[in-house]
Length: 103
Image 1 (tube, rainbow, N blue to C red):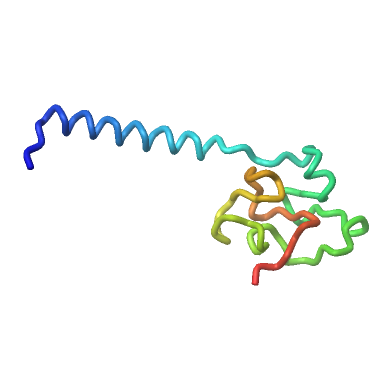
Image 2: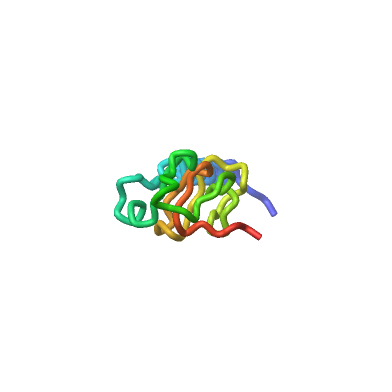
């Protein structure tokens, strides 16, 4: 199979463009704001150490998004999507009332 230089260059440019655009999409993925209505209802905090323990008695030290069943990233990821927030990015160090220990 012969590939012309022109075909090679066009394919290379397409692949490079696709990679660059995909990085932009993932870099700009929406993160959950603590002021978001769902976040308020679930008591989401981007830093689990700031959870109101009087209001959310379920919270225990060591619970954070990175070790929750719903966290869709690797435990070491700083941010990852969460289905509780429509797939928006949550902080790995965060916490919300939907927390369920990854098992």
